[in-house]
Length: 283
Length: 308
Image (cartoon, rainbow over all chains, first blue to last red; front, side):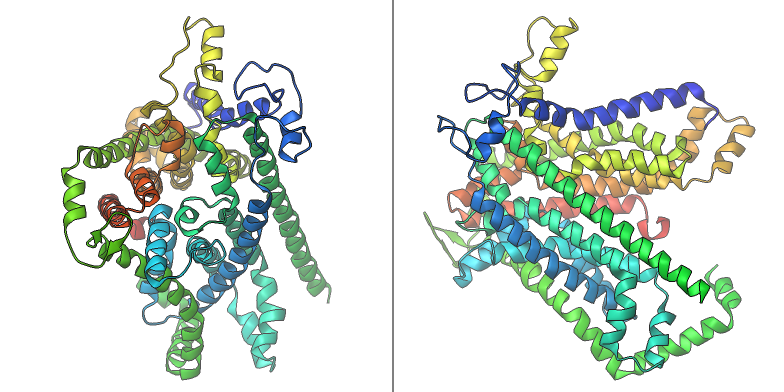
């Protein structure tokens, strides 16, 4: 197809427009987050460039008719929840994928059961969990009912990532350790874990960000204390102000810094793996 | 194919078979596997399967003003299908789903074509794909909200259109209509269509296309008879992703339609808000059924296990 220059350049231009379509709302949102305050509204034109709404989020502006975003405690809850979800789903994902390295009866059933967790829409998961909790008289809370719902969603991601990692993994390394009499736990720590570390890191990243941003599953399952997405959703109902745009910019930067940390850790682990390989070659 | 593979592997295959047999008999290894599988399986059954079954069960309960009672009745089901509002929501959900599915396909396919077939350099291919995925890395609600200053009466789109002289009056129907819901959903979900299609396209053997060209086939014919059929598994996977997500939507439709466009998901949210649990459960069961039918139908189009 390369010998069709016209088609090629048409598609190239189209792809650029497409990427523009994906990014345009963010650019507009970013620009409007620098609207002047408190009188500036969430639309053009920019009355005057200012960082008012950023200061507004951190409570650094004098009180005005615009209420501050209710994010303080919600942020702490969301981070705690995301952390717990990350640990739980990565452990569950690694265990289940480890089991899948052997053929066992019912593996097909378990596979589809786990994958179902990422397919069923969040609103149904939330509704179902809320119904069960209500009928058993369990109070709904972000650290309880919402937490189990989040893991339902992130565990399948961790499982699939770990499954892919184990598929490319040379079993003989482990067997060598076992035959040399190294106990299983120590083998896992010293041999298996370093090999699967990139996968673990990826599942952690997936689980944390998915949970941190999770909204439909949390809506019915969280109870009275709100998580961050719920708090943000609450501000949708009433009039919106540019402070929510500033918040959007900040939370996007937060997600990107997570991605950057992931990138650095990944590079380091690949580099150390290479170093080991080189040392082995020299020896 | 498989048999030949086995024969070539020869000894190592036999060793593996012996090892497999040994493992199967080893009760200790079996116990370990069971212990590894159990926590995840129990989690999914307890917190996913049981709640879903509970939803089906509760849909037949009796709804009192603020409570539900486990006396079985069909009342909520009859209420759903006899109400214009609720049955209308079902039809609207299907309509919006079809439009968004078509939009993500037609908007996404050319991009996937460019990424998968026209960029030969793997690094650049990855970079462009990552560029498409990055917006997905931001908060879902913020992504939805970002469309408000774009589409409003004083929004960016209207300003740009007025500046270049295409329109003299701002278009008011851009925001808080079905249109804005479709635009928002298309932007959010199109990436799930582009990814799988680009993946399938990048696996097409270039010599196949060259051969067709040498035999005198036109570009359109090559696309119709070679490229598109080979990308179909990607389309199906993308369509499943998009369908499942769009059918369960309520946040985008709520925030970008000013609560005018009510999908099944929106009905569930309002019903739970007014403690009509039985009714919400009915809508939930209907939504599940629609989704199951859609996914099953899509899976019939291609045999994914064979193709991937």
